[in-house]
Amino acid sequence: MEWLSYIILAWFMVSSMARPCTPKDGPGEVYLFFIKDAQGRYVVKIGESVQPKERKSQWNRKCWPEEHEWFAYTIHVPKRKRMEAYLHQWATLRGAWLGRVECKFCHTRHQEKFYLDACGGIKEIIEAAEYIAYLKGWTYNWRKL
Ligand SMILES: [Zn+2]
Image (cartoon, rainbow, N blue to C red; front, side):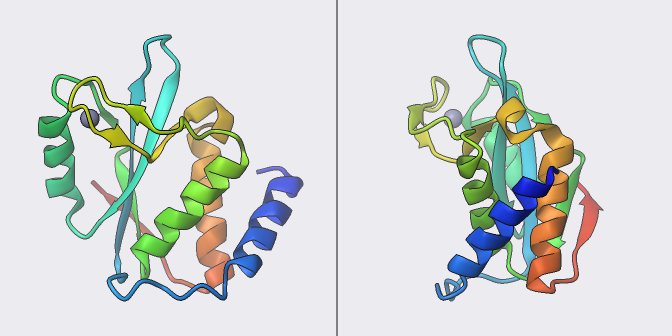
């Protein structure tokens, strides 16, 4: 990431530290998959789960026949919901959020989708996730999905 991204992320995390964690939060995975929008632009979905393999098949069923390219690894962290929220905020600060758009496959308004190029690509998402874990003092590991 560029140095300015690190500063913005650190500032954001300091300013949000007062917020309590949701009691349902705990260890688990943050997963990613990619889809293409009607213009052929890549969109990334950033989600969390304790059972990422089951979540993957749920998504594949729910939004069938949408083509999901799953990122092969999930990041395991002690607070998966908090990690997901930070990544959503980070991507939103970069102007990557799609907004509340209706899914043409399942007709729900998925809210956790972001333009991949506006995120800076998968490499920047990985760096942001690792930097968040570092700032929180969390041990994390990338696990094969
Ligand atoms: Zn859908």
